[in-house]
Image (tube, rainbow, N blue to C red; front, side, top):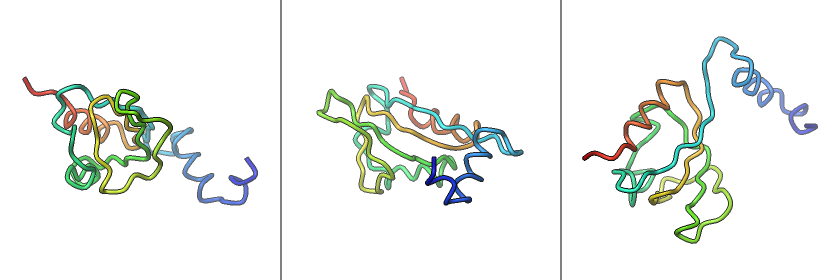
Length: 106
């Protein structure tokens, strides 16, 4: 908590996210479904921010693929795999757009 007090910009962001502040930001977890078109592609290839406006804050690799913990601020070279979990931040429509990119197309 002390680190937040020393960084007023962080506090302002947290106020916006938690209290609204006129912006409808959300932080959500999105799992990469089996067969998703984003699986086996890098964040750079997917251009998630440019295509949806959502920000990938972290990736939790799937335990199926030997992953553990969280990879914060993943690089554009980070490859996504089925069952990985993305921690994302954005407005609801941005997160909805990202969900659409991740959907399995029959």
